[in-house]
Amino acid sequence: MTISFASCGDDDNNQEEDVFAGCCSGLTAFGDDVDNLDQSQGEIIVDNLFTPNNDGFNDRLAIENIELYDNHTVTIYNINDDVIFESNNYGSDFDELFPNVPYDEFGVDGIPDGTYKYKVVVESENVFSKSGFFCLFTNNPVIEQNFSECDPLQPDEFDPLITGL
Image (cartoon, rainbow, N blue to C red; front, side, top):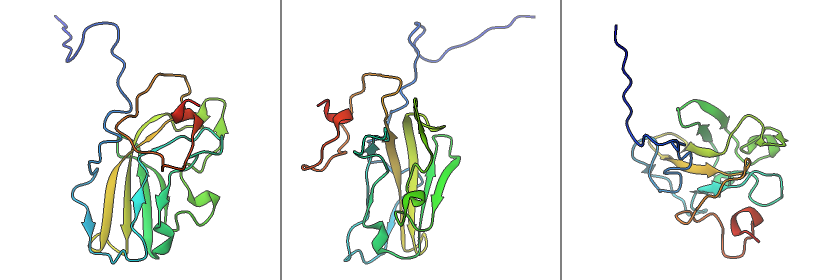
């Protein structure tokens, strides 16, 4: 009996997978977005990078204006499409924000740094459905990461983890 192994990719000892690949791409995660919603109250915008390291800057996934629209659902998935968070009242209190688990000495308890998927639905998937990717980055363990494709900060915001200041 002969057993052989095949490899796709580099055969050197540095085969670490880029857990942040595609998280700031702007691609949809679950098919085409649908926008038949009158967003005159404010456009729904999901940040594509946040840093939940308990420093008071960008510690929760921001979804701008979601609170203005009743009857919404926010679902967060890991890269394997397992649901890890769901809310029907996103942002109404601390438990309705992602991540809503404790922080430990390694970052967010049970939720490692990497790429995650989101889906926001308002009223129904025929009215408003938006999906995409975002990065969760606590830098624990410390790694050098370039988020130049991301636009995580508004001009007047400051996050020492991202800015290096």
